[in-house]
Length: 268
Image (tube, rainbow, N blue to C red; front, side, top):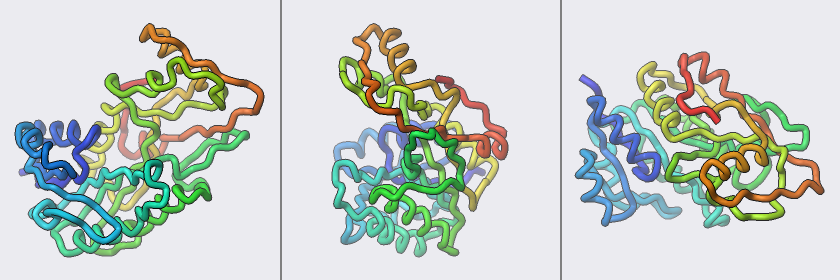
């Protein structure tokens, strides 16, 4: 019998993930911050709970959401772009207190490759590469450390590149824009299908207490990739400026491919 799984953050990625897990025999407790989504989650077979992380504490039914689950998939974006002064670390500290009081034994923390900085040298980034010094990156790294150092449960950190799917593609946002920077920077994206595939593979192999970077290959330049995608979608192409040398990075996912024997479903 497959165990119960808690998915905190049933949004653009979390809900399709929850649906996939349910289709494969899991029971899923899932969280949302919106009461209007409760019925939708129930319709999809998710046991729904309203949970919201704040700097003052966790609001909602967090105890019930975690109940009877051995594995937690934490998929809450830090929201630091919308709220640069937000204290993501403090929010997660409050959540960890509840996790420690629950039956959770494994945590899969969905992080981001934005913990790494861009550079004109275009570095190849692996899991142990130096992280960026920005405030946002420091908060993400601090949260990773909170989970990794906690002895009450095992944690795997899964850092995704830029997420996309047919209903949400960055090319649609960049279409028509002008004077875009970094035309020669490599693209580091990953399709939602692969995000779900990798998560399922980690669960299948029970691969805990490690860190994975996840970005599909190849890594075409921003100019070439977004021009090609916009042309295929028959929408106006973006225009880049070449006055400054491009900054970027290449996210290396070889560790993930090797340890999980994973084959990416969607190539760029």
